[in-house]
Image (cartoon, rainbow, N blue to C red; front, side):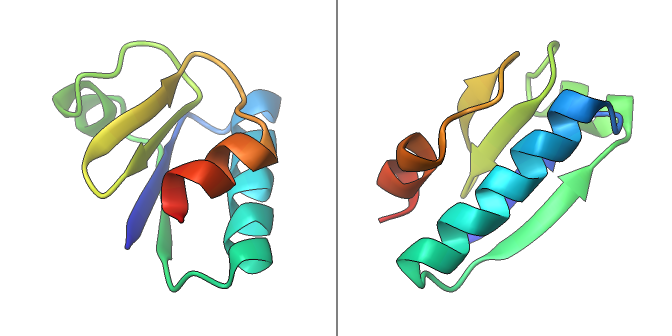
Length: 76
């Protein structure tokens, strides 16, 4: 599984990254977590507001920090 956390590095983006990492650890799912900070790469994914979370190519959350339980539901 591939998870991308998209954002320039603002506090909300950092928080989203930590919550994604916690959700992966809590579920025990094998996943690669990548941080995408390049605006052109983010735009190619169809994302124009950050933070955003992409799971296996599907955009799951845009413009807000998701809750850990929400992420766990996406990756189970």
